[in-house]
Every structure is written in C-alpha cells, then in structure tokens.
Length: 330
Image (tube, rainbow, N blue to C red; front, side):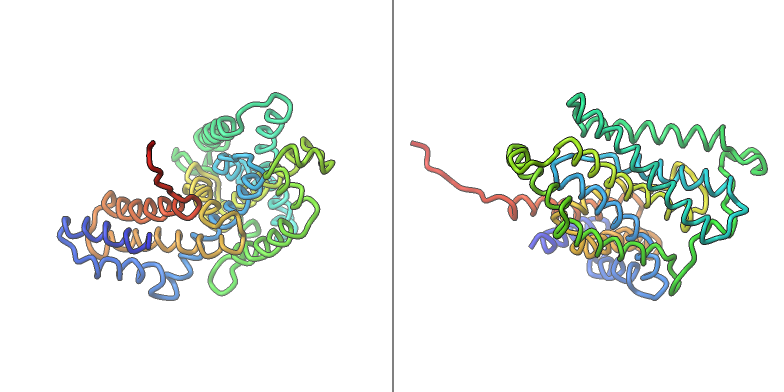
C-alpha cells in the first residue's frame, strides 16, 4: 500500500514537470535492472549498504543507537589505505587480508570510543556517534588535502591510488565484496539467532533488568557488540577503498552509513531481509540517476522522487508497528 501511495504522489509530481509517470517509473526500473551492466552497478551500490546495515543493526538490537556508520566507514578506509600505501611489497592475498584486518580494527575502535563513554560515563551514544562522524570526515579531509596528499597529482588534492595488489578481484564482473556480503549475511543471521552473544544482545535490548537477572555482564556485552558494529562498518571502508575508489577520499562513503540506518530499520534488524531492502535502495539510487539523463529530469527533481518514495515507505512503518485507536472523550 505504501508503495502504491508513493507511486501516486511521485506520479503527480512528475505530471507537474510535464513527464509521463509510467515512462519515468519504467525508466527507473530499466536504469537499475535493465541490462547486465546496470544490474552489476546496482549490486555494487548495494554491497556497502547491506554490510553497514547489518553492522549498525547489531548495536540497534541492544538499543545502542549507533548513528556513526559514516565515521566508522571512513576510519576503516583509513586503516586499509595506510596498509595499502606502506606495505606494497606484500603478495596480493596477504596485503588484502592485512588491509581488511586494519579496516576492521580501525572501524571497531572508532565505534568503541562511543561504547566506552556510554559504559563508564553514561553519555548519549546518539550524539557521540553522530559527532564522531564529523571528526572522521575532517580527519580524512586533512589527509586528502595535506598529510597524505599525492605529490604527483600536480597540486590536485587527492591521495595516491592503490597498486594492483591492493585492489579486490572481480567475480562475474563485480568485485568480491558481494561474496563477502553474502557470507556476512549468513554468519550474522546465525550469530544473532543462535549464539550466546546474540542471545545476550537480544536480552539486553529487551530489558536491562532481565539481562542483570540472567547474569549477563552488561558493560562487556555493550563494548563487544559496539566493536562488532563498528568493525562491520570499517569493513565497508576497506571494500569501498580497495574495490571502488581504489584510494581514500572524503567521498568514499557516498552516504552508505546514513542510508544503512534506514535499511536496518526497514529490515527489522534481520540480515536476510536486509539483502532485499539494500537491493531495492540501490535500485532506487541507480534508477534515479538514469532518469536524469534519459528524460532530462533535473537532479533535484530526481532526488525529490526518491525522497517521496522513501518517505511513504518509512511512514507506513508507523502503521505496521503501532495501531491507532480512537477513544470517546467522556
């Protein structure tokens, strides 16, 4: 129902712009899934969204609001970049593994900062993780424009590109991040549903008192879960730096950390459902880009169409999760 309402509203908007809504919506589908190459691009767009959504979902499950996915992706990419630029003599499999580990550690520790402040000083994790996004962005900006600026870029503010042995290989025309993502989906579905720590996270999210009664070490569980949450986002940074941009820049996240929050919410913190939602979001992004060139729709108008569809879907969640009751006033 929400999709129908979204299509109607977006269709009316397109009519006011002088476009045929049916043709434009068909163009969005064509732009996202119309050819093999477009499908591959949609998958590439979906990979960081999926992994980051699972990452923030781990923290959300215990009601720790990790809004810092963007910053954790940045720091993961930073860790991978430092390794890629300084250990160039390593064999490709070893270098990629070390880059991956560095990204996971950097992303996890960046998130753990908020976890430590929450556990020991009872700070608001929403504000802390959000502010850490800006700190990470400014740090990457400093690296790009000064500390790691490529001397061979003729004054252009960029960090040197990775060598071939630091770039993830491709399988079926898409970098192997899609295989990593699917492995993570399965592993974390099992982890959250059938592991001891997954049980502890779920209990802690339901009730702190129940967790205490069950003998769960609350502080330890929070710190471990937050580290895992940030580590997954850091992994996204590694994949994006190695396979997509092949360097580090302020544009590397492409908003994946923020969009992941919405995907985690719509998928009900379920990694299997997150696959579907991530692909739909990626399709919406790719389709929106396509209609700009195919139909001459301005970038702002395409963004409005995407926002209308997203808004209607999100608004419908209120009616799924809650029930409106009308009561007679006495």
